[in-house]
Amino acid sequence: MYAKKYLYIKAYFLTIRAFYFRQNKLGFMIIFGKEGRAKIEKLRNELSSCVLETYDNAQIFHDGKWVIFDITDYSISRDLTNLLAIKKDQTKNDFVYNMELSDVKKFYKVIIIGAGPSGISTALNLINYGVFDVLVVEKYKFPRYKCCAGYLTEKTRNTYRKFGLETDDCHYSIIKDFNIFYKYKRRLNIVNRFLYTNEKIDRVELDDKFFHLAKKSGINILENTCISLHDRGKNKLQLSNGLTVNYKYLVFADGTTGFGSRYQKCKKCNIAMQMIFESDRPESIDIHFGITKRGYAWVSSYKGTTNVGLTDVFVKKRDYKKIFADFLKSQNFNVSADKITSALTPIGTRTPVIHSNILFVGDAVGACDPLTLSGLRYALVTGERCAKALADENINTYKKYIKKLKIKFGFMKVMLKVFYLKSVLFLTFNLTCKCFGRFVSRIFNDFFVNKK
Image (cartoon, rainbow, N blue to C red):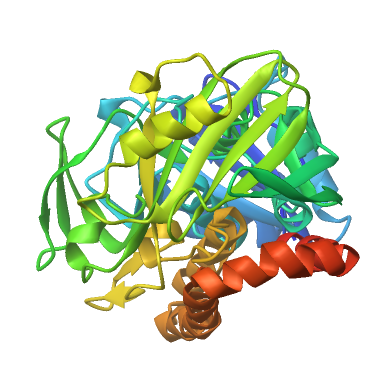
């Protein structure tokens, strides 16, 4: 179970970093500065033996002594009162810790590269499992834009809720009017029941809230920082800010083409391209097949914002910018295609672990459905599975999970090849959609959307 609410109290010598739930126990963490530790020594006779034992065994870091207390019964309440009474005039507020270069230690148990959904999921889950010695290194500064159609499924929303993040707070709702086109002709209208989007039809707000949830949880995050050099033999990273840090475990959560991709075999990828602009188009989600050879295009409009995009199995010699411009023209959009953004998504899983202590999560491990390009929930779940394996120091459990994904995505890769055969496309959109529309609608909602 994950923490539903975090409370921060900051004083000159003491910080209550978080109240949390873990393993069916309510607990809290207090960081004692130098003055706070001196005051604790004067209170030793008033504290219980179990609290003193927890305090004495806690580790001292650069910003103080990190003490984690599990509340097993009401007997600790008196001790908690005494600990909080060390400073009488404490003020309660939401405290977001902004990491400075001087705060960076030389060694961390886990360093995570990338603060996207998979990286933040890994970090938050590590805290849930009792691993606090974590550093996240992020290339950009948040909020940051990512090429994404901006859709969420109900299962993805439920996964975010486990972290205490309500996607409704990021202005997500359902666009009920969902249309399927084939070669520019509408073949089916579906009542959308499970696919959500936000007002801007992107993921910027959601990713930013998830990022700040991690910062409020006390996770150390370095923004605007890249890897300059990686010495795998010495478990050492040289960062673009000039710092050198060592690790016990390294987690790459930096996407399909990030720094970690150099350690993976080159595999086929899907390309995704999109533009977002203001328009007066009626609210709807239109999916177009027959625009690219093995992919689809979309036009999503909601509250005055339109997101136009396309996907395809990436072929280097193919002129995707022209294909995109032609599609814009076909939809009567008088906008320039110069501001297209693009990204690559993996087709099939990659090696989950190398050198026994370097792991990959999210798109970096290929956790993306090859057929639908749905990857957000897989990013969150691979982060959770990775964190559990690291906390247990049993990496094989993560390997086994990715092996199961490989089988699942292998089946979807076969479906990808079969579905985009010309004969199958013709039968699907000229016969099946026409004669068995309700059946297709149910398959779409219950299999392709609600299962993701």
